[in-house]
Length: 533
Image (cartoon, rainbow, N blue to C red; front, side, top):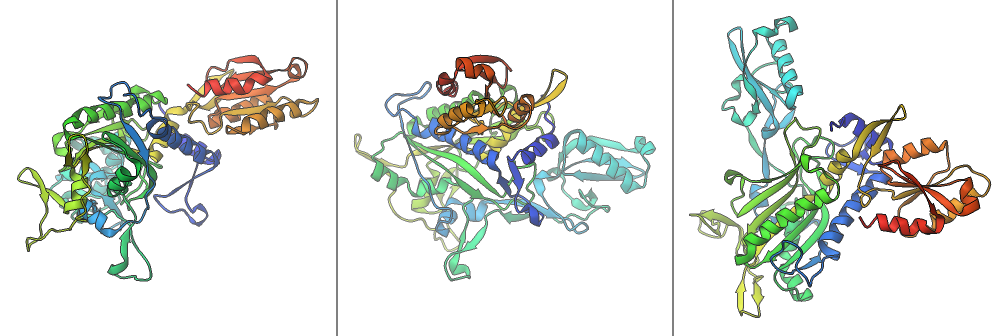
């Protein structure tokens, strides 16, 4: 399946899924607003995650594949936290990307997102950079190389390319680099660190004394509340704490629709377990989270579970796997991250008690400054877990499944978008899973007379108490079906002339186009049964 992103983006705006933020003022790059249908879709995704992972979890029995039964609880932590949280977690020092600036175009790029390839022609060898990949990137580098050399398209055979597109990070010197928007060589500056956290100020003080940060992740709120949750909820290991909330990262070059944004929403679990059981729990959560996406409709052919190579792992990680999706805006064969499942060991809880940790001589130890003092001192509070059965106090190990709600929403939109020929016409349809669909059922009176609107209104009001239902009485019935197909409504109920004589209605399925007659009083139970899928 090949999805045209321009058509999908157009549909999202036209039907009220997504709008550029502050659009009447020209927009603000990296920020998006969810419209009436988009907010329902994203909320349904978050609700499905919360129900499946937290509220509907059975605390008494071990799920298939789980080593033991476990408990799940939730939190909702503040966006602005004590600055020391981010110093001890390592974000203050390490949460950055490398950027390069172009002295000619005055544009800024993330170092690892720029690609290019080496070319040789007329005695010159240089690296042609671009921000796109695949065939589009190859074509763009070819066009820009010709222009730089003053050649015409018919002279393209003079260009001798050395290999395929590679990352700018492989280039040692930028003197021979033609920047993505430059006309001359050597205009890119050396890479430099760019901290991704948004800075703000708390209270009346505007200096460093009042400086704080918008959280770049939701996880740290869970860690600093670990002891509060244990004491107040009486949970026992193993258990998980889930949270859904906004995070903020000052991305250098946000792009690809909502895939990389500066404000985004996360769905995170911090799962605490005994260190001896952590490898089993890591495998359990890695496999379970992958199945969750396939159960909701992402095709396994476009989804993959990729274990990180050793050189990709964070210094504290015992193992990390990414759930990745083949987004249509990526070059063929490439995948974008949907969710990461990380085995974090005891790094976080120890850091918030002892101070900022670093791997020294193979072991995690408190990082010291030049004077031999902790570089960032922890709280000093004993937030270890006490096991009253074995009379042991220890730091639990943590498994962290961290998913993006916005990326998840985008992936399900990409997966659902289809164009097909039906009776000589092109039908655009979003084949969203019924649990995710913004509107569950549309109620359609065939005509606005003869008692049909009144009967349709009764069905609508009965269903509206529990579900998102749409009432549409405008236009030909075929056109109304197409409108519902385009926004992903899985079912339509039509009230027609026969409905007034025998009390039945037409039930239409979005995907199969099957139409059956059911009794009007059975419409709500039928919807309830189908939404339990």
